[in-house]
Image (cartoon, rainbow, N blue to C red; front, side):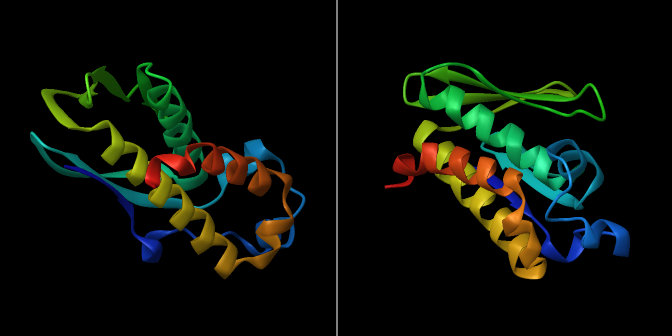
Length: 156
């Protein structure tokens, strides 16, 4: 079992100035200064947790972890704003899920993790683009879209 979800109602609205600059602002700004939200994560072996994160940075890290895992490597989600770390360690067709702040490990299937990462990332981009259509014109939207497409076959 693996859960990764965000609460669209908790996504922090950009300021008027940020919204006006959404199509042109930098990847760095989008990753760290826009769209803070609550993310829920759970795996077999530990209860769901709620974390407050910058959504696009978290999506980026999830996609990097998925790319590593799909290549048979250890994946990790690091939190720029803190020293917290979530690691996904391959073990046959499963992953051990380790959290730096809690010694209790979790687990999930590799395919399940990849499917969840794909769905979570797609939902996040879609949610932002529906509320702020100018986000689709930002080059970073295309970067994330390409990263999502790279893991899409895992869902099928």
